[in-house]
Image 1 (tube, rainbow, N blue to C red):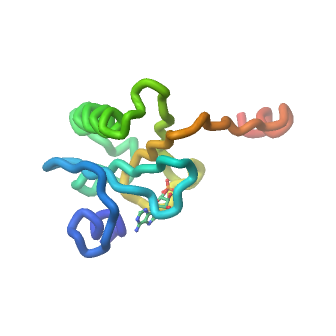
Image 2: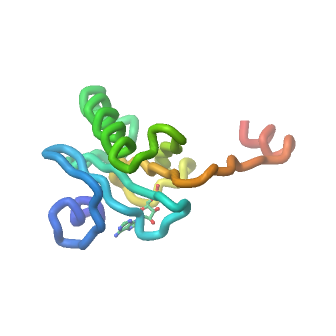
Length: 118
Ligand code: AMP
């Protein structure tokens, strides 16, 4: 069973922020920003392309609730989902990283590297 399913079942401890019947938000164990949370559906969905639109719509509302609860609405925040191998997804259970609490930098690539990536 995947690590995030184990967190949902309480088999692995987490530091939760908010949950409802369908979604869970908890602190990332390896934070990359002053606030770094993970938001997951409780049902196992591996990739963004497998995600039903209705689940995504409800997840949007849940993420908005988390951001409000964390007081991030005014200053803003970043949402990221790493998807698949090229996207750098390590845990094969759909999750959004919510990062905030500071002015975040944006990675810069050289024109050559950008051209290659495209
Ligand atoms: P990704 O590369 O998008 O799949 O990100 C997976 C994230 O899960 C990483 O930022 C990890 O630090 C985080 N992570 C892995 N295991 C745990 C855990 N047990 N509790 C909280 N966060 C975790």
